[in-house]
Amino acid sequence: MHILNENAPERWPAFRKLGFRFSFIFILSFILVFNNGTYPLYGYISTPLTHFMQRLTPWFAENILGYSYDHSIFINGSGDTSYAWVSLLILLLLALVGAALWSILDRRRASYTILFYWLTTAIRYYVAFMLINYGLYKVFYMQMQPPRLTQLLQPLGEYSPMGLAWTYIGYSQGYNILIGSVEILSGLLLFRKTVVAGALITVATSINIMAVNYFYDVPVKMVSTALLLLSIFLLLPYLKALFAIFISGKPVQLLPIQHPLFNKSWKRKSLFIAKLAVLLLFIVQQGMGILSTKKMIVEYLKKSPLYGIYRIEQAGTQGKSIPEDWRLIVFEIDNNKVLIRNTDYTPQRESVVIDAAGKKVTLNNYQFDYQINPDGNIHLTKTFDDHTAHIKLIKQDVQAFELIQRKFHWVQEYPYNR
Image (spheres, rainbow, N blue to C red):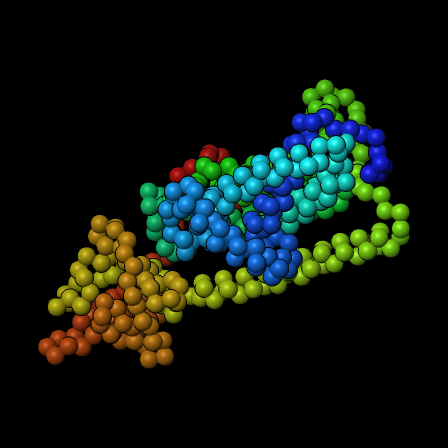
């Protein structure tokens, strides 16, 4: 194993030193600003930096770039906001200026082997923690959900590219577990002896994530691209060896990643304890995050008391209490909203209030009494001065949908592609 020593005689060429200076400033600043809660507890100590960027970025956009956008939008479910891209430009310019000044002030330096090690360490933990987080959410089937009732009724042409990708991936729990498990293998980056294997895995994984984000318009293009580039950065010292293995077919020895030399045992022990503490904090953070997210999903997806897809039948009812062109109604999530499909199959969201205890439902500004029949159909009644409205909601069989009905088959005499 090779041990780094600050007194090593190795001298880097000028272009390599300049490239390292730029990379060191840009990569570290990117990790600090676009951390996404990757490092345990980092969100608590990064508050001053976050507030500073949230003031600097809008000012820079308006006064330097002449670019206007909604300054109340920072980074939310989208990582590709105007704020994010302008912030990235600021970091890029900072790295260029910083590298130039650093080159002037430190031009006699022979190499940066020690700093290079610590930079790769920061990258390894960033990429590994980021992808492990993604992987766990897929393995526990929380990132992409199976199709909901409203999606089963949604024509293909109504899907956004991202919605189509999410539904495609979310349909199969097994596929989620598979790709999530591969992402969790990025944990190999956390150990010096398996960095190359880990980086090769994260390159492949990041390409897949980036492809989905790019080609299905998922707004996490910046971070997914960063994961790929950072994974490639980790492989730079091994390019010749990898070329020999995969292209030339020659045997080579991949040495473990080099590390600084600590002469005193207390320093080695302190570093080990710090690493162990970070890993334990990350595990605890992931566990708490998974439990919290699961609880949130259960609460958000709490089923409506009238859960189901129903065909509306109100033939023979005088003085229609709901529009005549309503054909389908979907009660799904208990959030005071229902989906309506009219005769043209146009979707519309309508407010609804359900009193399960009193067997009453308020729809289209009318309060109906309802009764659920043994066959699952719902009978709505509303008494007026001169008549009583009767509306029947005929429950549709969700299991009849091809996407739900069709299961896995080992034997298929013909392709079943519909």
